Image (cartoon, rainbow, N blue to C red; front, side, top):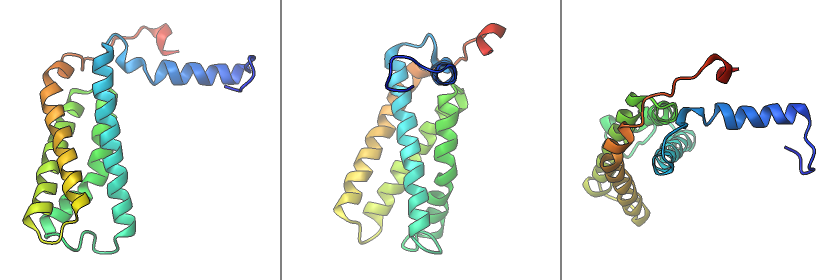
Length: 160
């Protein structure tokens, strides 16, 4: 909305859409659950952006330093990270499971890339440790988050 105290009808509709439609999926869930899910969605989206940037700037074939299976896995994350984030955000149980699968396998793949292959920089070691912590947090919080993955039923008037 504009900086002034009065808003146009279009600004009010836009504000209501953003705060009504975007957040409706998590109505009724505790703040801690929304925080955990929001953090996982942000991590997955960030990971997707990182993989897209690496593809855009790394040349062809991508991840030349990696074995083919690892390069294929990292390339697949350009789609899977965003898919898991979207499914998790929309409160789909498969999104929770996919996000855990991605975080755990990404931590393992980065661990292999950092410690199994030669030439990893110190920043890669820190990044691998951080993604491992995110994977551990996702696994630990999954049972509690899973309870809230059911979608909230909406009436016709709420959808309008």
